[in-house]
Length: 219
Image (cartoon, rainbow, N blue to C red; front, side):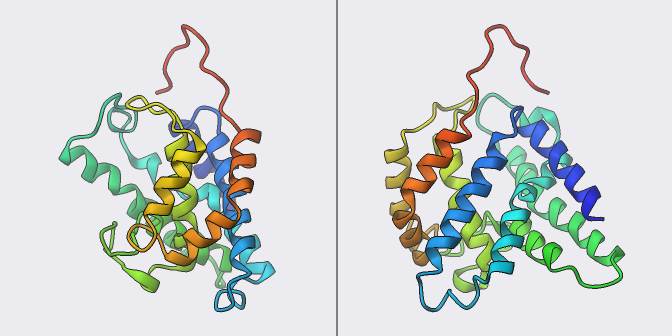
């Protein structure tokens, strides 16, 4: 089941990111942030070596549900309309359901799948309850997803999209910091600011290659 999920995650990455660098960057961000958060007293007991290992390993699965999103929406060059946005948002539930099926097929509980399902379903939740798909707020959002949220948003901000240019790292830092207590868990933002240089290093090490002139778009 885990091998099948890995294959699906690879497929999702190829459909949404032709280089796969997004997964490498977000995995590095998550590792750096989890390390910084170990300095926070009430989080230290939760962030065991095993937990962090499983969390980093689960990061490439975070958008696995995008295998179920039509290309016309996934690769739309402009902003999505309301109906398209609802379909796009469903990738969280599609992915979590796929992992849930893998859990059901397993003979014994698999901690990796438990953490992966949290990340997949809840990484678009917001600290103030305005996120999706479940409108969770505060610590009702799993810790794994609260960590992933910062990594995913930072990478989206610094990455080029058909409808926007990439933002400078410093501007992305400012936006994440402004989301403290609204979009993000305050502890996550505090940890992010501590390890910001590690985020920048990962962003540079795993930067996307410049587009090839005349290359066909990925579909």
